[in-house]
Image (cartoon, rainbow, N blue to C red; front, top):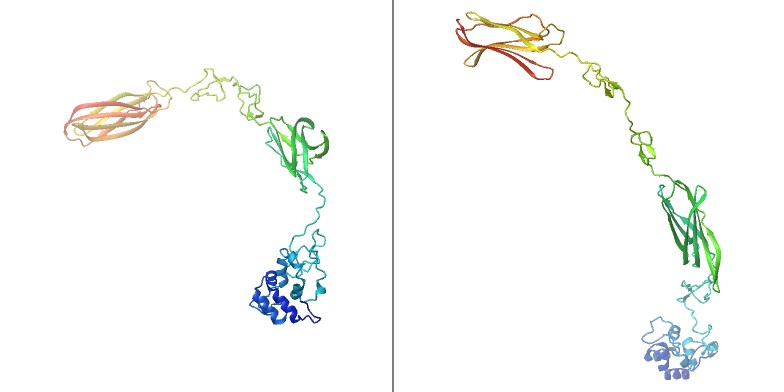
Length: 421
């Protein structure tokens, strides 16, 4: 079975291919009847006839899928591939049927083949029609870049909390082993320190150290990482990485308010700031401490019995009183005094009432108001008129309020007084 110079297959080749239709069916995946119809149509397996003539499938793809399975078989089918490819037998000289080299007829040439198209990649494929993202490159050496991030804090009263992150900005994933040293300085002098053994780590590690109950002062610290390099059981210091951060915290003593004057009665030894609460023994000032006295001294702290008071107000007294009456009138004359002897003392406002009654029923009355002061002869009079004949009771009272706010009363009564009318 072979192709002539024009690419046509003579009848003897077609007959031979028909005899091997079973083999061609297994290689191409087509039905045997379709292969026979295709060969009889134009002598070439080109999907020109058969039930699958309208399927646009590349015969070469089908053969390639089955290549591994039929390596041995293909060594006997070179004439068959002449039918598949439509080329002369000399076109098959590039086939390496035992090694399947890159020049094989099954090397990808169709537009659906994707691979790495970057010439700088280790797996560059010049035969690919599109890049499928599979390129692989030689990994360049990584230069580490170790840095510190500081986020330390303080309560500014007694404690400092050192917090820092030591990390490789380039993330080279190299392993380090070593320890951190922290030296705390107060007012420029070394004050305290800490040693943190880290063991091994990669890319990043967190550092934490607390300094508590600190004295008042200005603080900063130095933070360093020292690598440890070990070889044949012997270890020694290697590289050192010093933090560039030097935060400054000023610790101030807690403010305690109170009296800070040692001479005060309530001196507070623990107080750091005076709050104006100091108390002292009062200065001795003698004088009158009674606010009702005429000579009251508001600055006096000790009473010296020197208080002077105004004379007591006089008491209201009834010096004299007389009841008089005629056929239809009755009157009362009275003399009220303040005190029992002449004086200049303040007096009182006095209300004086005079009335008559029958069977405890008031029939007529009158009222007088007087300011009674001193011991003087000042007789007053109240009168009741138009009284009809009969027996009556007569009443007289004087009412006033004393300095203590109490109501005082003087009263005089006359019974069974007959008025002739």
